Length: 543
Image (tube, rainbow, N blue to C red; front, side, top):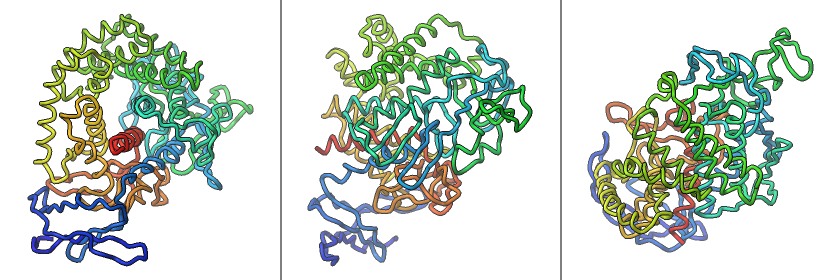
């Protein structure tokens, strides 16, 4: 639409199905963004609860609600369905449907050395531990989530989910129970409550994998991936990717003794040791230990023990050149100080040991020097620090708030839209969470609008189309996405896709008819966990 003379008509859907005009007016010109001219229409004055539509010219939106509780259930599908479906090493049922069997019970073989795998996976010239190439590493067949539309376990993603859920529990005490999860029988059933908070059960599931890695290998590893490309391309039930029997090289191919198998279809554990992966696991386990303290005391103690072990081991370990090589961009000294500081903070909170606090205070000046880069970490620290620290941080938050206002000039949506190869919904959600955490400590500095915009964007107020990027949620949700069922051109309820990519030079794209574009439509667990937190944060503000 290019004509500015057309009024924007705001329509209310009445209880009998008829339509009535709620508001009309001429939209204001925002200007050009990418190749399009944008107009804006403010209908925030409409507050009466009901179902509405927005009309401009011959275009009309799908019906959507206005109400004070509009977001209260928006995160349910993500916790109730998406995360159970992503649970590795578990049988997952939903009524008559089996999403997948208990997969990868034969995990895992040590990856061969000097291996350049696919999708960024690789193993260096040594295994880094006592296991030989293609030797079975026991104990890894527990916990963890499929990272995305694939069936691998990426440890960095496990960190993000455990940390988000631990923060969710400590911030809001979310005790929703819609899922049965039994680790002993490896059984998960969706929409069947078992009397236990699902968030804690999901934290438990992630912790089991992280603890298992360190106990089996001695340190945190990059993750576990398929050994053969035909397995990596596999869609459907994950249990069919392997025979679920531990590989036995003494047997012939396809031969089995009932417990082991001569078929080398087991996944590989990629075990390059890197400091950032170790500290990430320490952060996750220290935070999770607090959340699990009453729910699973034994696992809580074990998580904290492993977190402390990692801390001590890292401070007594001399990194070799190989570890520096495989740390890549994470070997940046400023980044390493940031992640070590975060580990010290979480361990201090979980133990009250002054040694951790002392190290945290030594590292804090580096974080404060690059406040914007470390704002999310600092924002979590502020409530547990003294008033002097809060006063020290205040001018940095003021400058940060000023930069938020500059985002309004970048595009008409007021969020930073990625121009990289992977679409940017995760960064948008994370930025809004950081804004929430800072607003919690400095409500007079951070406008809540910079928190709400993340959900507005996800649910349809974005370029290209007005579909919700959350499957099963919104007026017009994503129904074709890159999940494990993408071959069916279908979706997993509660999954969140990466969103809009800007194709050079200026074309915003998110395909709604083709699920195989992973950079736009692939569900990822870290984004989904952050989304749950953001919705609860917004609900908390709206109360």
